[in-house]
Structure formats: C-alpha cells, structure tokens
Length: 295
Image (cartoon, rainbow, N blue to C red; front, side, top):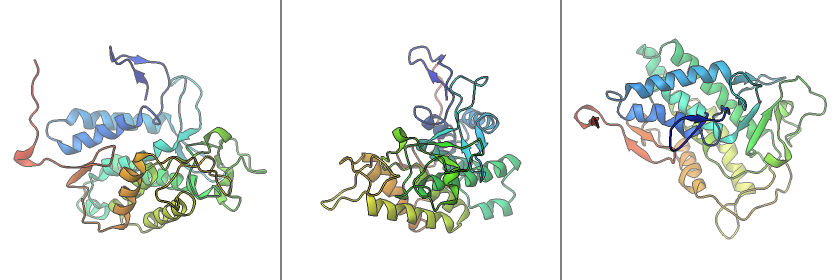
C-alpha cells in the first residue's frame, strides 16, 4: 500500500507493499464489509479490486521449489520488483480465505455453489501463501520465522542463500539477511493457520501450528514466567532480548488456542476478528448498522 498524507489523504511516495503501515487497511476492507454487508458494498468492491492488483503485480514464485510469496514495488508499478516479504504479510492468507468463503466451511460453500471463480482462485492463493508463511518458520534452526524474508528468484542452489536449517528442502528458496533474523513473537502466521483450518478443516494447519507453538515453548519461554523475543532465529541457542510484545498474549496465543479448540467457538460466519484479534458479532437483519448521511 502507498502511504498517504494524514492531512490531505493524497498518496505520498511510490512504495507499494502489504507489510508494515499497509497491512491492516486491506484486512479491514473485507472485515468491515462482512460485519455490515448491506450498507458497505463499496468496501467489498475495493477489496476485490485491491486483491486483483496484488495478484497481478506482487505475487511471484521462488526458485527452485516454487513457494508463492507477495513482494514489494519500492518505486511504484513501473519500478523494479523486490522479493521482500515481511512476516506481517502473513495476515493475507487468512484474509483471502475469509474473503472467499465469508467464513463458511469450504465444503459447504462448494456444495451450495456459493464460490465463484475468483473466490476459488483467492482461496487457492490463501493456501499457497499459508504454506510459504509456515516454511519461513521451518527453514530456520529454531523453527521460528524471521521478521523479514527475501525469496530467491535467480535459481541459485549452491550452498543455499541462508536460513539456518540445512535439512529443510526450502533452504534455497528463502534468504534471511542478518538484520532481519529477529523474531518478535508475531501472530500473523498462526492467525492465518486458524482461518485456513476453520475454512478447510485440513489437519495440516493444526500440525503446522503445533510445530510453531512447540518452537515458541522451546526457545522463547522464560523460566521465571512469560516469553521473549529473539535476536537471531538461525542460530542455536538464540540470543534472547528479554522483551515480550503485548500482541503475543493478545493475538498469537489467542489464535493458537482457537486453532486447537472447539470449531464452534466464535464461528467465522457469526463473528469478525479485528486486527487486534478482538471478536465482534456480525450484524444481521434488524441489527444492521444504519449509515448516516453527513451531508
């Protein structure tokens, strides 16, 4: 997303990305519409158009194993493509899955013919991106993802561009630069695993989530209580920062709990989670919001 001026609303700069300072915008386009679809159709239209742009301009595949990722255009649509993907972008698989199915189980939605071609395309992209986000964890020595990853688009395989876990098939696809190797206990990947499991009921999303949870337990849990961020996920033992971000309790552990819990708790066709993982009931019938014309 391009940044905009807080005073004029006009776009400033050329950087187009879904990472920091842009991620929540795309998430809220679909989620605010879902909470009140009868009055806010323009938000759904904006979401559909933005995802078309993402697929056209930002989605690529890595080499040699074809991981699907979302990169950046630092200098606008006419500039060079950067194969850089923040961990923050791992919110997108969950958002795409929610936007495609509206929180309904995929099997049910297919049976009732509720998914159009674009929904199916977006759901496939969601599943591909969710795997990529998981591989960002599995490729490191600790089993925890870096803050930022770059993806190999040149086809080099000799020696591996970096990652930490030389036993991983994907070590040549994912490049982790020294300045980006920290882990802040972020929630985005487990958030998307929660959405994908609820939508597909594929057990692999729980399996991947459990691997991530065990890595948090092994390397970030503090004996005296709490959890801590890490300086470098590619080295063992990782150096600890002695700092726990509040979103680890408020989001990361909440989504892990929901991933492994009863699927009837907070169903996605009745509740919408905001970007801080707070559930809000979907307004239906007479409970719908009334849009006020401000003149």
